[in-house]
Image (cartoon, rainbow, N blue to C red; front, side, top):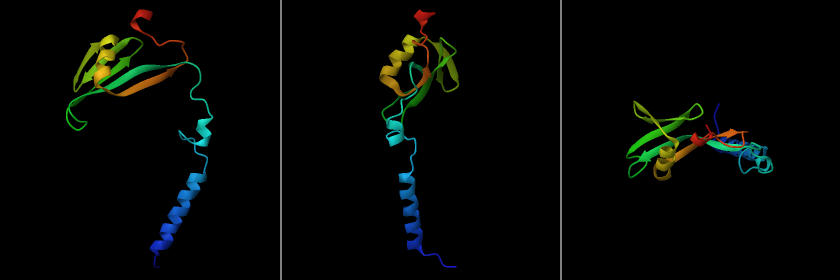
Amino acid sequence: METNVEDEAVEILDEDEEMEDDDHDVIGSKASSSTPLAGAGNYCLHGVVRHRGRTPLEGHYTVDLQIGNQVWCHHDDSRVTEVDLETVLQKAGGEGHIFFYQHSAQPACSSPSAA
């Protein structure tokens, strides 16, 4: 059986058009633009990927993660050290590339002064 490349291409394009017509819940789509995000509450910082170097392909990546309610740990290859929130925020200002937040129904995120 011989396959006609043009027929295959038309079939693929038709499938793409059908997918565009579907009502997917994607940011920017009709479905999500009128849907509220996660509701009331706050988004609390739980992690920061930091980078030191001239370009994304050169340099060194490290991660700061919140463990439990108040403890932050700095992960640098196999070395893990405890750091305070102020240091995390200070370093994130210049070196932060990816920030991880978690939705919380609580009115405020936990902080050292809230303990």
